[in-house]
Length: 64
Image (cartoon, rainbow, N blue to C red; front, side, top):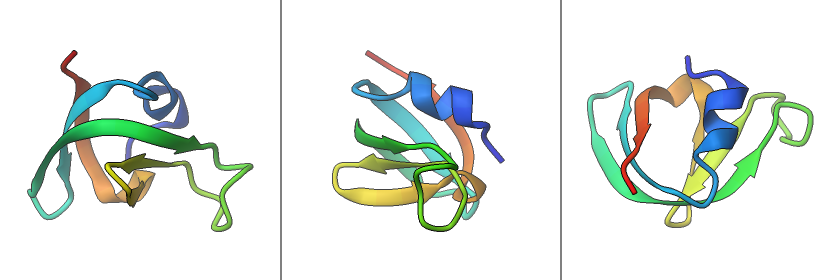
């Protein structure tokens, strides 16, 4: 699982992400919610309108 600090650093950046099912996603992170702000108590990000919880992300890197 990716930690909250790493996800926060991706906010407003273009990223290359691999989810736990080995799907690749490239896009801009337009939303970040900490574990305290999210409804399920887990940090999450939104990439091009799709939400990903931290436990769904295998790896993520900023590419811009």
